[in-house]
Image (cartoon, rainbow, N blue to C red; front, side, top):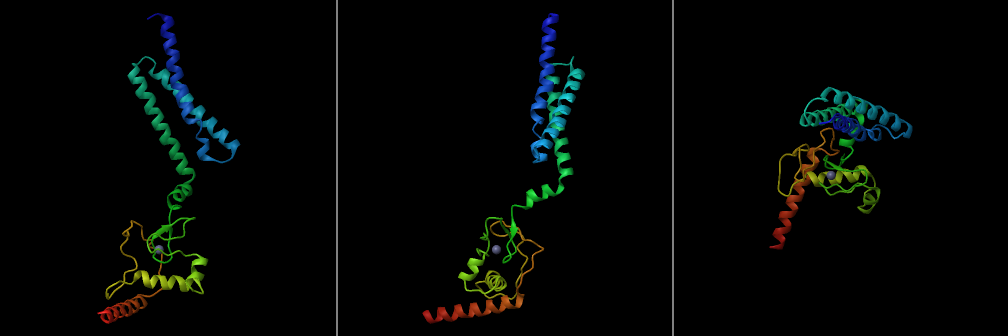
Length: 209
Ligand SMILES: [Zn+2]
């Protein structure tokens, strides 16, 4: 290979080693801040840093084979991405938690994490805890509404002698129970309702026959 060709090839590799990391990492500012000036700062720091390391890496692997060069570049990009992710988690630990927990809010009636900010209809107990539903159902307070719905939800079609407010931990519809949630009704009031309901059902079906 002539000297010219050799240096041209080197130039191409140098470009690959610097431009690819810069292009990949120059937009990370987007994740760190909403402030446009800070975005530019973050992008300059991470873009510049990745380009600089890329250039250094090229000099280090200059005389190695193409395969080794590519492996080195990919390894560097992966490690740098993990490094940025680590900085992000370290800088915004609360953001990470928010992203995971923002999704589902605990339903006051059944205690499962089923609700979102916009969706107030519980997918587990099928109660919609809104003022308008409360009025429509004829309750004068939210507390009364929740209590009545809890008694119905935790009762059973057949006669039972115990109530477990906290099990199953994962519901039939795959919702997770919030262990910090506490019911407003007592086990006794649920059992009382259960007894009355089963009695009523038996009498009613007897009457039908
Ligand atoms: Zn519910």
